Amino acid sequence: MTTHQFSNTPFEAADVIRARKPGFTPRVALILGSGLGVLAEQMEDAVSISYADLPGFPISTVHGHAGELVLGTLAGVPVVCMKGRGHFYEGYGPAVMTSAVRTFKLIGCELLFVTNAAGSLRPEVDAGSVVVLTDHINLLPGSPMAGPNDDRFGPRFFSMANAYDADMRDLIKATAAEKNITVNEGVYLACPGPNFETAAEIRAFKALGADVVGMSVVPEVISARHCGLKVAAMSAITNLAEGLTPFPLSHEQTLKYAAVAAKDMVTLIHGFIERLGKT
Ligand code: R1P
Image (tube, rainbow, N blue to C red; front, side, top):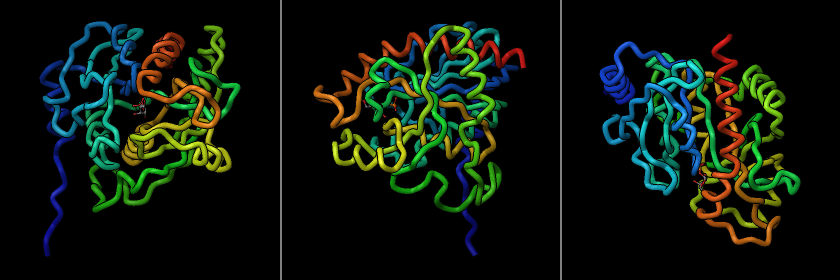
């Protein structure tokens, strides 16, 4: 009988992080999506590690994804911040973010806060706005948890109920009210990319119940729920989806409007972390 050899990259990356910042135990891991790396500039006592030095982390190939992990504090709370993520379409497959997420669990995080740039299926929620995610629809081929189950991290079968934690959403909404920022809530639909969606697909996704569409989020959220990390997630709306806008979609547009939405997003996340620090 052959026994499956599970990857130890999460443990190896955790050792690298502990060596670079001894005694550091983060509460929150943030993943910063396309053009949203600016939040990391607010961190104090920051130490950066290139993904190239972190076993199991995806080397970023997309503009606007720096490929650096930043360790430090935000509003006095210890956090780790991924400046950029890996995507399915870069060739990594659906488990692209699993090792990184498991590393965060190993170093002590309790919450994964996922940000991303996305298209809106609701004409009234236009470029520059922020959507708090309530759930997702996975249209990526395969699951990050397909294959032999690594019992060191979680069970074979697991629930996705309340995957986008309702208490965390309440905390975000309370922060938004305090800061006078309008946030919508919605369901994220993940496409494989790298092509943007067709107008017919967008009509179909609307019928399925999607509010925003993008090419990430889901692999990391499934990985986080498998290993028992809570999740909060937010989309920066960078465009109306195909068929709802006369403007041609491009990654340049993504980065331009991510910078617009990033202003509110940074305020919200900073305020949210501050509130979390008091709980
Ligand atoms: C398209 O412009 C890119 O921006 C989004 C899409 O998923 C796609 O990768 O990136 P993030 O989801 O990483 O923010």
